[in-house]
Image 1 (cartoon, rainbow, N blue to C red):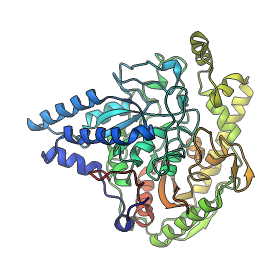
Image 2: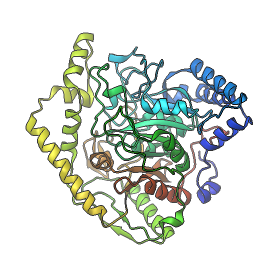
Image 3: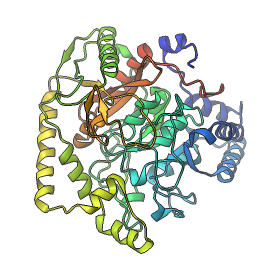
Image 4: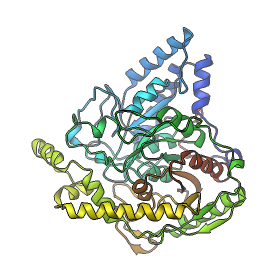
Length: 489
């Protein structure tokens, strides 16, 4: 199924975004041609994968032609000139349907872009459509009551993970070179791992989020404001860094947004990492992990440490399972009253994890305990990270599994909570706000991708990119056989 990847293993995947933008700006190719190729691939492949839930071919082609006209007149095209980009269906797009994966908003068309979409358009990127997600993002999978289930390009019988399911599948299948996801507990990193692509959850506030879930015009929608991050999903670390250079920076619309203290988003060379302090944990002390995933992740961590000339310590922050606290924080960030009101008005029954959150009675004491538990986790983590520059773990506890379930019910022969056990590693980055990414580092014996999570210290997004690039160069995997040839493959 996989192509010969010897060159990619030696050098890492070829950056696509800069290549496309450079060619479009120079007139070597038109933005119209690039976007048309993206729609050709979508037509050829997405009928099976269901990565997209809404396409905007007319709007995208007109935006591409307008960009070509501006470039012909000598105007700058922007750092992402002509780059096709897919936007997760939880992120608002002006004039393009945004359903949040729910029947409650099945016909909703926003009149404003989210900040990140606004910035991408300004940089010359062309929005081709919206990608599938779980309902309101409550679940790390790609099914919802509105659209067909998203499938994994490596094996369409399996899930791509989620909740940025369509974004991961679209990039892995070569439908677009860039997709945007959101991550409240692993929703960028988990599908990146299962689909064999790169996904980074930047530091909390690095990429502002608005309007969408944080605007009063959308009753019932909750963004997990204290947990959620927006990040790029790409085939290379260099591509993600270029996307972040456009997406990051403060906005008065998001009270959590950070100053632009990072001005150079180019990936630092591996030589700059000599002697960094790396720690690896296969289970954080409590996670259940598939033995093959554990072995691949540990081998990748050992190889990375050896290539960087660093020692590899084995350890983790002194934390206990934090699932109950995390769930309470999600409930606290959920507009439960608004969702109940909307659902009752439309005669819609909300099920799954979201439905269970709405049915439960939550007390102020439960929320207070969750807040203090979060503080405990944050304190334990920063103390640990004083001794190490980066914490490496498996991204998730298993490889891709069957469709239309929240997760595997058995891992390593043990019965587990299907909705959360396989995600034990990812929520730590959301509770702490630390930057974290998933790098593809290997394949299981039956050809399913495995990701290594790289978590950095407070605000060290650039360091996470650097370690990710080193892992990509030495450990990267090939791409699924469904991919086509062209600019971004």
